[in-house]
Amino acid sequence: MAKIQPLLEHSELRYTISWKRKCQAEWHSESQTFIPLQDMKIIQEPYVLIYMPADELNEHIQSETIFDHMEQVQSTAKDRQILLLIEGLEAYYKKRALIQRRHFQNQVRQSFEGPSNDSPSSRKRKSGQENLESLPSRETVEQHLNELQIIKNIMVVPTKNSEDTAVWIENLTVDLGLGRYKYVKNANIKSTYKGGKSGANETDTYFKMLQEIQLCTPAIAKSIMKTYPTLQSLHQSYRELDKPSGEMMLADLEVRYI
Image 1 (tube, rainbow, N blue to C red):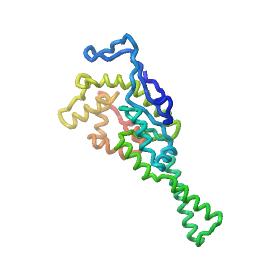
Image 2 (cartoon, rainbow, N blue to C red):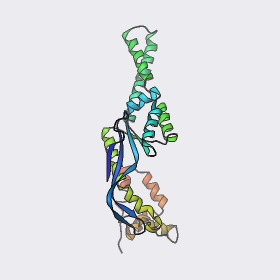
Image 3 (cartoon, helix red, strand yellow):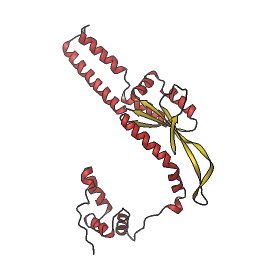
Image 4 (cartoon, helix red, strand yellow):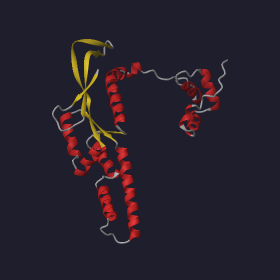
């Protein structure tokens, strides 16, 4: 069971969450079963998440405090993986591009109006320039994020809005909850993995590969191969279609059952 709780009880690093698991059984590799524990154990999951709106990120970039800020988080998280969730980054890029476009239009307008003066319109243009300079460019933001990922080993997760953020955190929590069982399932891959059947030649391999798809019977596989004789032709035809058409590409194939 995965549970969310604050990482720091009395800290200025807001919006930080971590996960702990309540364990009532442990996996026993020899018997391939979960053995119940006499006493429940609480295990710390190896991830912590920092929620940061795009505006807050830009403030850290402008004040050159983003690396110090994340180092503080790392010192508290110790050896756990940091996930930096940034909300509204694409919206910020669009906002800055709009301001930049308006600033350019004002510059063009100013060149036709002649030398600048202390008129309200002139003061407005100067204010627009100051606003633009206070907003880090896309290149600057991405450079800092790349450094965080490469140098600090921090995973960056961009989300569109609060709803997208909530869905992402929910999905991550579910994945963490199931992660232990996925690990057990894949721990002994040699004994648990069922490989596909190899064919006598390319055509036979293609035929057997199609049958690995759920509900694709030998008759359906033969019908697909009649229209698309090779995997390359099937893939190329799919790529030439838009997504809705591609999903229905095989819907009208005639299947003959003998």
